Image (cartoon, rainbow, N blue to C red; front, side):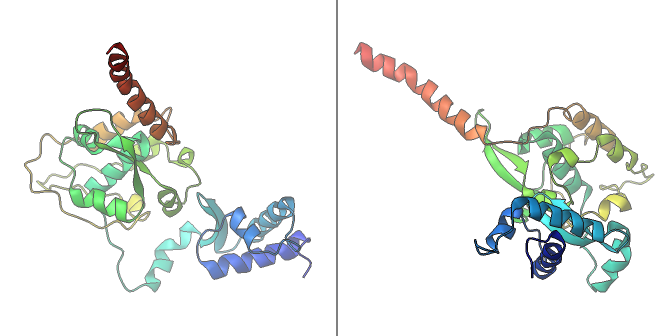
Length: 261
């Protein structure tokens, strides 16, 4: 096999992706070759472009997500392909959807800030489920009494929702079009639109047994998010540096006092 030929390399990369069943980064592809046989980076990119083009008109596609490239069934076939599995996908609640949306569009955000916007307590199982699925992570602690944890989304969240980066999140206007019509009933939970439901399989967990305050409507939630859509923070590496700077600043008065003594 001539690995310097993008066409032959494309077939090999297709085999890698079919065998792995999960996204593979360019760095991972490089590691799969001995140094003497490893193609140049430019050849890899040409091979991936050819592989993507070869998927045109077929039931699957080459998709670049946050952690790399993967071969996947096209979304239009999902309703039928899903019948291969006997278990019904778990549905997720409106509360889960709103919590995840707030974290995605307004990150970093604390649990208390989510509750202030939604107007109802956040079920602890919701946060636990999102952490266990590794869709969210703790990126720091707010510098207020109690030092509440700040949450942000992860690359696995982007992978699951078929996104390469946070910049590819759907505009809030698109979510507003999916807002369900209000029901003439006294249900605690409004139904999640089918189009949005098909994009995830989060567990449907009950709300905490707490008397809800005036819960924010879906429209109000989107309006709140809309004001935060610009300037979305995507890099949280500076949070740890900021915490260290705060500690140094707090230590200065003590050092000055020691000098006077």
